[in-house]
Length: 231
Image (cartoon, rainbow, N blue to C red; front, side, top):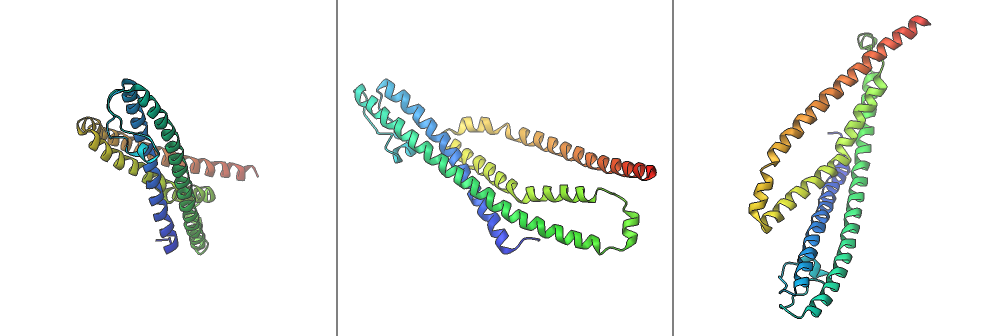
């Protein structure tokens, strides 16, 4: 509602980059599993299975037949080098994607929040005197700042965090089902309970925060009355 076309496009770009960053996390987990499996196979000089898809892109994961331990040890060196190079590439891509996503969405959020603040202040200043007689809360500035900061976080970096976590869950679950659906189903069975508990905790925190704001407002009014009486 308060965003321009450019700001919507920036938020969409932040979501896409957040997904890219989540792919980096899953890729890091996958290559760790690949190098671990290769360690075992090279140590036993067993036939190499064709599962090291990412390491093969960086020169590792060479398939060798069973036996000839020296060849397996030489291939293990190549696997370790490929793992190091792949890790660096994944970290760089993930860092650049996450930093760019947060910067872009925070830029859009700052512009939206500034626009909302101007409209809200203009609306308050245009009210009649009776409005200020019936609304005697003296913490207008702090309330405005807190509420707009929550809005900025909600339409800013939290969007990237949601995209990052959502992408990690979707991609991680997809890969898990492809590697072993039985164990994945066992792990997914606890997800509804975790979501329920998280929802309850979030609602409780929101309720406590609202009570805290009201208490601060009441305390501010009392302090202001006391100071006025002293003067």
